[in-house]
Amino acid sequence: MASIADTAAAPSWYARIPLAWWITGLVLLFMPAFAGEFVLYQIFGWTFILGMIALSLMFLAGYGGMVSLAQMSIAGFAGYMVAIFGDSAITDISQGWPWYVTIPLALVLAVLFATVTGWLAVRTEGIYTIMITLAIASAFFYFTRQNYTIFNGFSGFNGVLPPQLFGVDWRHPVAFYYLTLFWAAFWFLATLYVSRAPMGLALQGVRDNPRRMAALGYNVTAHRVAAYAVAALPAGIGGILLTWQSAQISPGTAGIGPAIDILVIAVIGGLRHPAGAFIGAFVYVILKTFALDILVVLGFDGERFNLLVGLGFLAVVFWSSDGILGLWSRWRTSWGRDRLRFPGRRTP
Amino acid sequence: MRTPGSFSDRLTATGTANALELRGLSRSFGALVALEDVSLTLRPGERRAVLGSNGAGKTTLFNCITGDHAPSAGSIRFFGEDITGFPTHERIRRGLRRTYQISLLFTDLSVRDNVYIACRGVLRSRFSALRPGRNETVMASTEALVRLVHLETVIDTRVSELAYGEQRQLELAMALAGAPRLLLLDEPAAGLSPTERGELVEILAALPDHLGFVIIEHDMDVALRVAGFVTMLHNGRIFREGTPSEIENDPDVQALYLGGPDG
Ligand SMILES: Nc1ncnc2c1ncn2[C@@H]1O[C@H](COP(=O)(O)OP(=O)(O)O)[C@@H](O)[C@H]1O
Ligand SMILES: [Mg+2]
Image 1 (cartoon, rainbow over the protein chains, first blue to last red):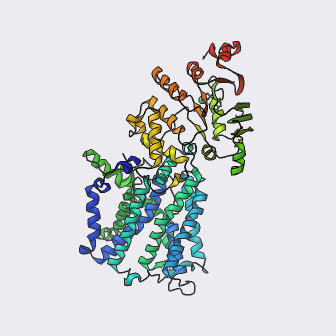
Image 2 (cartoon, chains in turn red, purple; image 1 turned 45 degrees about the vertical axis):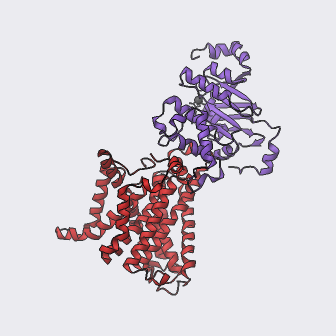
């Protein structure tokens, strides 16, 4: 099992990475050599973005036992901040500040938003955490839809583009693919790393045994709130990239539907390991992109897409409480060569 | 909840102050009075046994001292500082430690990780995002604590795979993390084999002289070997206090406890 001793005694960290991970990494790195622009931009770009937002939920729910439905709102909030302080087609509102001000500012404000959310939510447990974060998510949705002075109401902002940094057009499919891959890989590895650092261990301790953690000197409430603050970073970056991908942000981006989609993604993938967030996102994007065509080919109404996602969700949860990763790890174990390691334990 | 005292408060609080001073401590659960008007003083380094039949209020007394339960009335001073309203973690950071009657361990983690979490908890870096380095002092103190309770052969074993006695020893190691100033030990010997009891007594006797503790123990032999003074609780009240021999020879105690139906 994973332990802090791993870090202390590991002779070479790369020797412990399973072969499957090397292959996945290489395939992703050279994807533009054989994949078309649609696959790069729509399938993988979107997967990485949703994966990062689901990762922030995985961090809170998997390690911290706190199921937050507000992660999509935090992502959307960061997207809005970039549109409001930076450039958009809505020149009356957008301030046009340079990217090196707007992006850090958007992330700082997203962390603040998450801290307030966490501060409200950590006083509750289980279903009540879900309810209070859902309330925050719907409050955010209705507020952005009704507020025209700052959030431009129903239509939101269009023409929100990434900066032309290093002379690269970051919305070009290949550039956007690498941009999203970079941040997805960064947050994936950072989450893995932190899970065995004092921050992650403390969070898992707070999840399993808050009373014991307090008796060891940990301020349980403060750690929970801090986890919300930290989780705002991958969500916020995901939200900014999502805004750039479609060049727009509007209330619907972070409505109740997308908030629940993030939960579905995280649960389908598996909450025990950061890889689950990206596996779930990939399955979701594939379904969302192709289910309509498949359904039409089979003679069904294309609108039934959500039914397919719902059935897939049911099937995964029915067969494995740890999502696709749980199925995978059981399959590997049954073949006696499980090398993917899962720190932490079954989540609520 | 009151905010913890200032640094100067704590500075003046040390020195001649008592390690623990309970004044009129009471705690009720609904109509049940689990603890009533308990006053108790412990000098620094003092080792005290708390005796009493099941339901006497011993664990409730510990829960009030650590802040798991707020007392219904009374005050708690720890090395001179009034900690009555402090949250648990603030009390722990001041050097108070406890073990649990029913082990509260992280069963999915290794022995090393459990002790490591305990060592980190009382450090400022308890929420660091950086993994510990190979030569970090916390790693060394973790291993030293594991050796102290003779668990070095199972240091990388998952806690759920440990024997019962080993889990009790791990409880003790976690309570010794950092710089403890007072230990509250809730029946550490319960369920141990005679050999394990002997080891426990040795470990407790070998603790540094300045480190006092309160030990709840049903087994008079264990209690009387490690503690110099005994407090007997009955129905939530202090029934007798005295040296081990005074308590052992007290006819009321004998009637109530030693010779009693569940003695
Ligand atoms: N959390 C609680 N809620 C209700 N009653 C409790 C609680 N904790 C303890 N009690 C009651 O208080 C009394 C004293 O319990 P306890 O302190 O655990 O006794 P001891 O440790 O001496 O065996 C018992 O009657 C017990 O049922
Ligand atoms: Mg008890």
